[in-house]
Image (spheres, helix red, strand yellow):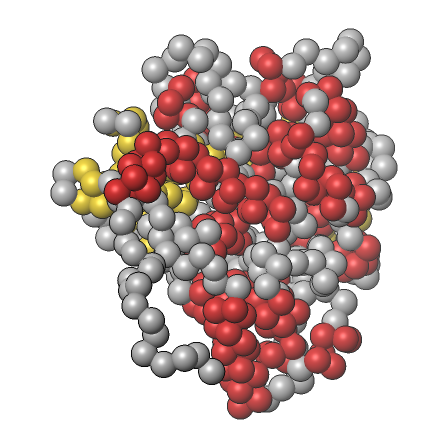
Length: 488
């Protein structure tokens, strides 16, 4: 989607003025101004106070929140090249964000940093008034600008490979895009790795095992839609991403697209719109387990439907069809065709797209695999009443109030390490509500996370801070003589 309003010069002038406004606003509220975390060193190198994995919206906003709290010894790492962080210009195939345009989040309450301020500076106030929802490419452009204007410390092309506990510090291993191995030590680690950060994207085994890899793709993968021109495409899934991919295939000239879902009806109620209230966003994490389980059971049961405009994006094509109550029971190749068995009969396709979401399982992610066995899960910490069980909910990690992992066994040698790893991915949702992987909840989640990180660092260094006070002897009163002249 291309926005119109300002020409190139107007846009540059608008963004330059906004940059100055941001600097002024941050200067006005910049108190206290000095770094306060005592430096630590390991093997002659400064230890990071906080390392953040993921330079998408959650990782960037966390770095800014820490900076506002005068915690400056922070580094953000991302495996993607610059500009390719997060889903917005990679595998996201919606036209606009799904959240209302007035949502705030990364700005953390600074008006000149809001998406609206950026959009108006770039396109003009009139364009904002006419806007329905923010285009996804503009959201990525906003995040790129946000990173630049705040001068956030990001190292791109760094694949995070794992963490170990060494001398009371987190030893972080990376591999760069050039194949170089690098190690950093940190006191705190934030995993801001998005929707799939607690596991992996899910493709049912019967599809993986029975089809050649060139005949299927998950919605999270790179797909050459131009190669689907004139082809018969099958899509499995009921969520928004399934419909986004169906629409993209149709717009690329697919011969036909057939979407199948297990549910008897396409989901229509979006629980995210209900969740967008300050009470839930700010205080859900403080509820007892029984209530948090109840909220999440209902939210997961409703699922997130395709927005109306996304559904119409598919339905405007005569060669689009959908089938409810139609799970895929089996797939196989028959000659050059993909054959799908369903309760509604046999279907044949040239290519299939899988929109079956993700699986939460820390053992399936390379960077968390080494400690996954030690992490407490909801299914181990809470036993719901009969009839209210959920294997899916039970698989999510059970977090502490600062997003930290909790050990299954408090006596586990890994327990101190887990207490210093903070999970700011979608898998934090049952414990903390909407947070790092959700624009809607980011403002509240980021502030709570940053407060928790700062609290832990200050408490750990409590004796050092007391010693600093005891040694403090900088005089403020420096003369007992009369002033050289009477004050006016």
